[in-house]
Length: 48
Image 1: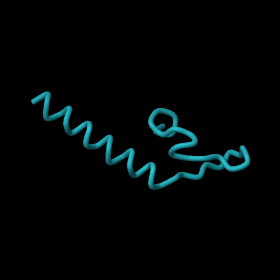
Image 2 (image 1 turned 120 degrees about the vertical axis):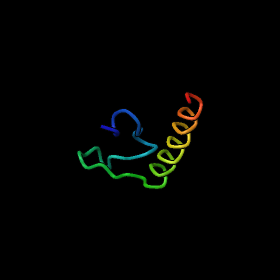
Image 3 (image 1 turned 135 degrees about the horizontal axis):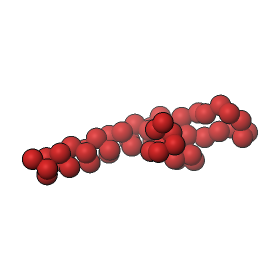
């Protein structure tokens, strides 16, 4: 589910040789998780 909505092909994952197998670029995924977590925490703090 996240692959289609949050993670972007070519940035967060690649499909080598156009196959079904997906290889994740963990550093980019980790960065997206950390950035997204900080962003949502700020939104929660602003809503309180």
